[in-house]
Length: 342
Length: 283
Image (cartoon, rainbow over the protein chains, first blue to last red):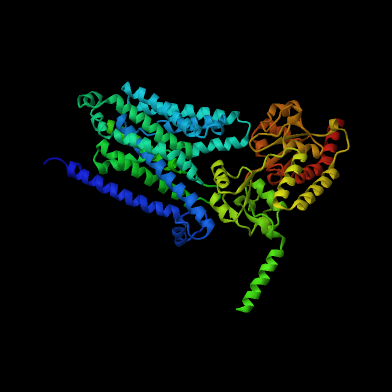
């Protein structure tokens, strides 16, 4: 055997299983920490009782109706972003593909801002998630058309920057033209991203769409392995390329858009997670999809816990923190990519 | 055992007799809401105030000390036992929605841009706090102090004031800044230009219509209040020949009865401004 041990397929498969178990355990532990940690000191014992509706009425409300939905939303949003990142990187055969970098998140924010600006959610409660998902779909569709023309990594990332720039310009226009100073702070929120003070109302809005999105993305797994060899090779292996594209675009739009609709723009999760996990699962795109869902949930929850621990006075927003961590990571990836190309 | 029971009964009776028992527990989110709450509420009924309430931008920082503070999270507001939350841009929409869903009454304070609106808002908040007399006292005091500084000359002869915020913005027609300037007996350069709202006052306007006085406000104690004038040589050249008065940002972070403090401060400068103008015209 000349294959390096770290790339041995069986070992990689075993490691993938181990990774999934490890991430699941970490996720459960983090969720318990997340429910115990908030803005008011409630002892762990009281938190445990409150989960089951026992004890002080205020503690029960805080744990059941504020901390629990916040935790669930961080997990859902992170899982959606992680999965989207893994599938987009596979589909576009581009290591820098990610909802944030490619402008999908910002475009979804624009969709949400349009709904807020024209007060559409008052008339139709689902207007906000639908607006955000449509925004995400437009960006993903444009990117895919570009990727189908075999443009390089650079063109794709620059197109993402252009989509992002245009979305921010239009959001700024809405803030500029808004006569109500409070609407400005409400709009600015979509650019910063947060899951603070969400209730099960928001979970109900986002969860079905994010879950469906992750499901559609997970179905693409096998086909991504074929696509890794190029589209023609994939077709010769019997992969329905058009169907895979459609699944990936709709899946990303649902998972990212619904997340943005309730939590605003949370960037770079989809970029970092697949890169951190890829060496472990052995560079097989299909094996990366589910671990990335778990990894995205873990990373987002860690970031949201950090936000709660770091905040004094004005709260640090979740999306601001992930961008602060993610941008240097992005920069590092660009430099590494440059070295590899040389 | 019996002694303990008697003690408990006495404590209960005493507790029931204090007025705060009947009053709703109220929290405030945002600097403006803090000021109204600290101005009008019974200390016992204050569930919590925002973390800014003890800052240098809070007139009632002393009163706020010792009270529980919040970072405008639903969790803290609920655990503080508030049944009513006054918000002035302090709560973001998800928090406000969450509170309403959990049965807490959220009152979003509107901008009060005239003294009539300030009175109406003061009455409304005082009524909700269960302390209408406290509201009437504040209004009575405000009216008396405003009457005391009212300018007697016709408005056309009032000195002209150019008002700048640190960001270069001003206060035009329909803003509480303009209401305050009028109350203190000044003509507002931005209003003379026919501009409404909070937009910028261009340096060109200062060149065309040199004001008699500059009013600047600082909303960050770290910043030099004249920095906005120093940034622009045209403005700084004009300001060096004129009186520049700094209005502490704590008096007008929103339209509240505290505006009268700003009006009095401006009115005190008025005799000097008028004599300086007279001297210039004699030249």
